[in-house]
Image (cartoon, rainbow, N blue to C red; front, side, top):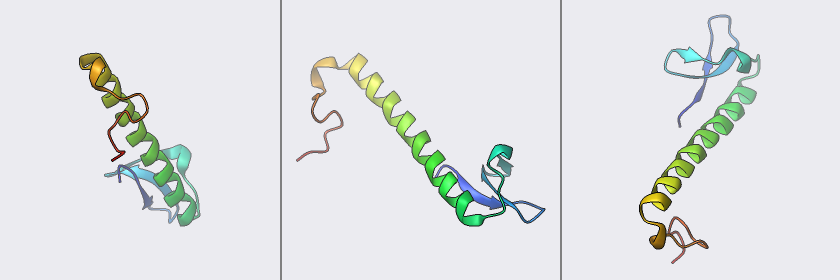
Length: 74
């Protein structure tokens, strides 16, 4: 996962990565921090997938199936 729930010095939780965290995600509830971390990670990965799709579409416009752009369907 890109982000995870981390416990801060004051025993609260926040979404972070490494030793950094997002102050606006600070909460007293660990489960809430974990859910926020999952949502933020999913968004980050979705953005990266969109960037990849855009590059593929620019370089190889004839090779992308509009119904199955990433080739997942068998």
